[in-house]
Length: 362
Image (tube, rainbow, N blue to C red):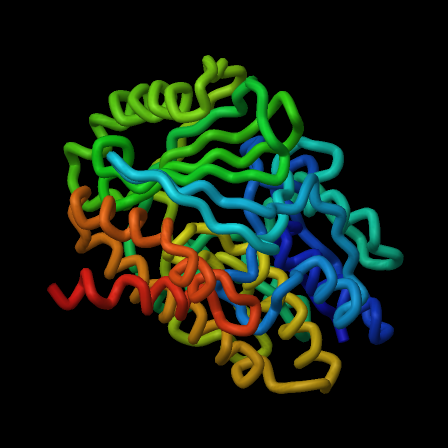
């Protein structure tokens, strides 16, 4: 077999590592000069939308022999609305780095490769590669590449504004904001990756043209509110902005001997916008199919279910006014509600959905 992987991101590299585990190698074609996300950013790798996986780092290590070293683990999430604040405690997940950081997840995965070769600065096309190879894994991270061979259902395009910021942070505590004055129908979050540096981001859907033109205004308000909430001056060191970041899913996870993985597949969870776990699993499942260890479409069914459940939750939250968001956050101050939302034996998604039902029904 001649296997080609287009894209050296989380999905593509996880696929290559799994192929090597079973005695196969792949040629990996990466358009950039190195592996890694094009922006320097911290992300949250959380089991919130992938129950029953409670510890993703342990799961990938023990189940799939893929080893990750996160920047820190998260034990507390502070949730802020316009007028209320609450927190949830537990094993929430892990913070990891993307981009040019030497310990980014992509670079960690690339270092574990033994025989598969990454061809950097390689601008191959699917049309050309598919003629030369027996199997192709489309892992570019760009849904537009999926649209060249099949429909891709777009849930919404989103916009980001963010920065690496300097301050005094608790490494295992995350802050999130649900406030339409900062991110309409979206959210803001702060993820520390050291005691002195963190990633601060606002992300929201591009439903209204006015929301895009006001992005700088929202971003300035977010920085000001984060400084007020954390009772310190948040210092911006390196800003970034992203438009038209597509959240959606493909129609078919496999077409012939072409496997659609990662963001090309629909790895981004609409609720929080993170997709590391789903991306890696899709790459692993594609490799398992090639090795005769399972059917890719069947293996991907739970990922589709996670996506759909996450989208339902996002649409539910989008319906809430700031006043209703205050009531939701205030309810999290109740110890029994906290237990329902964060208990380890139940998907947090189900817990949050349970919490939102009274507000949505109104």
